[in-house]
Amino acid sequence: MDLPEALQNPFARALPVLTMLHKNGVAHAAFSELAQHPIALRRFSEALITSENEIARKLAGYSLGYLDGVGPEEFDGMLKLEISRAKLGGPTEEQNAQSTVEDLVFSAVRLIKDGRGPEAGLAFLERIVTDVVEERRYWNSSSYAMASLMNADNERYQDLFQKWSRRIEGPPPEHESNPNFETEREWRDFIKDGTTNQIFEMLTWEEEEAAKMKLRPDGRQVLDDLIQALEAVAA
Image (cartoon, rainbow, N blue to C red; front, side):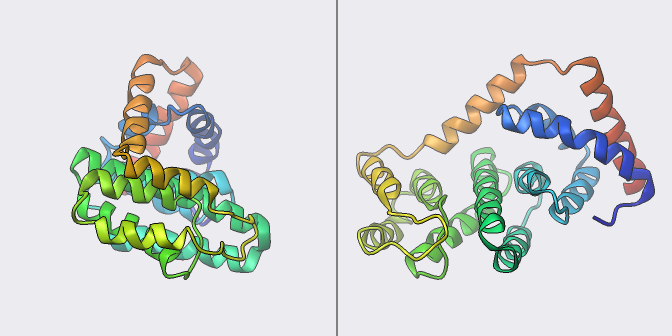
């Protein structure tokens, strides 16, 4: 990762803190603050996605949900990087790619939920579902994407839902994770019954949990140092 020298130490110190918050479902506590410094957050996101650390790349995917003015090209750029890594890195990198794309899906839903970039979010979710429908690539988060599209606009995505439903009734793709479409069919049944808001509710829960927590003094200092360093470089 090619970071300016002024960012290397703050970045290295912040990554474990953000990783811990993300694993506990409360990364919103940090990224909602970073979102108040949009130029700095964009710089941080660009650095994260180039990292060899798979957790950093998950955080990069997660961070897109907090940026204003995000376009489809930013989602596509991260997606292409993960696909390239997966092709070169074998099963481990394929698993990492699936995990990063899951965070990209969550970010797309956040943009829709918050009304800050709904069309970019919808376009990415549609891309993930279409990849599976047209057998271009298997994504284990297509269920999340499909449900969220239907939650956003049931009529608009009804045709895509029917195509996705037919695909997951067919033979599963050859893939390192050996999918059997069982999970996808469960989600299809939820969608048919009108339950489509799972990811929206998950993000709301994360926000509520993050609001209850307070960073420890050392974590607080690490986040403040990161913001200060990012702002200095972005200036």
